[in-house]
Length: 384
Ligand SMILES: Nc1ncnc2c1ncn2[C@@H]1O[C@H](COP(=O)(O)OP(=O)(O)OP(=O)(O)O)[C@@H](O)[C@H]1O
Ligand code: SF4
Ligand SMILES: [Mg+2]
Image 1 (tube, protein in one colour):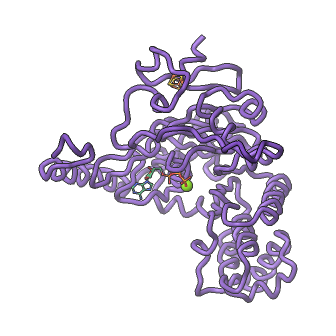
Image 2: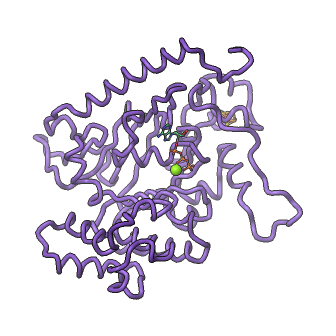
Image 3: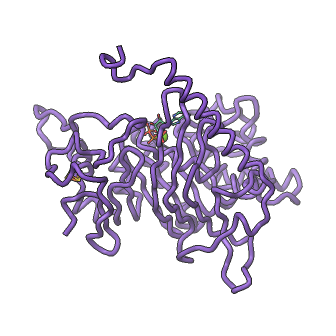
């Protein structure tokens, strides 16, 4: 039986996995409950121009069928006032990376088991050597995270209906964020600020919208409200996870333009997660391409679009529909499937789908090779 079905797990194996998972989950949950001194969850940035530095991040899910390495040693930076686009196939770990930054990974199954997420905050002061202190979000206690979440770092999700509370008015929910930004303001001041934010995101009758419930608004309006909420705290970083996938193309263009304008005028950074390469080309300054929990290519938007190097990035570009291409020609799709995240191979994860693989590709997982100061790729073809 075990030989016939590769996914078959015997009772003995299943018991072993459950025992292992319980031990791991208990260990990481206990770590979170520890009382920490500020020096234990603070660090210094490697480059002061970065807002976020993700360093070798590992986020795993301890499931009944084994450990899913959703984020498997990811490192990238989000510079101040820049838009960083994160692209990759479904299930490659984009959302889990963003949830790790927010400390919102579904616990106890989901745990950040390694790495650092440095956040350049202005709240912490300086160390004895005069260096500005930064949070290491991986170690930061939950209580401290309340000061960061929703204020310094906010999130816009794909489906606003799941993030807006259906039983409270838009005004009530927006006022909550206004109070978070400045707890000393009066109710009237919060209302005034909320209405100003609704105006800012292009809602034509903000006073009317303020009194409405989420279900009384259209999808585009709800997404604008989400953006207003994300901006109300005057954040330093907005994480936009597929912010326009649920909207039609005209509204999508409006919302993206609005996000870009507000990012420039408010001077914040955006981590933009999307499947849509067109959106990335329009919005991002830098691009990170993920595959099966790892980064396989990174560069400026020009480098990734004009000179894609990794066979996966090339395949992604080829599978984009183009105006003017023959209607008779079928749209290109990358053959094969992403490897099982529970039993990842030791060699390049793209090998079973790659048309350019060489003998070397059967060796250990390729390191990132630099092709310019800003462009690097994890593929043996660029070893020289
Ligand atoms: N709560 C969970 N329990 C178990 N596994 C999970 C959980 N959440 C995510 N995963 C796994 O982590 C991996 C990465 O998921 P993630 O949601 O980050 O993908 P994604 O890149 O955002 O995909 P999509 O583009 O479809 O949103 C997937 O293999 C997924 O099955
Ligand atoms: S390392 Fe080899 S298998 Fe992997 S993408 Fe490059 S050429 Fe293809
Ligand atoms: Mg996702």
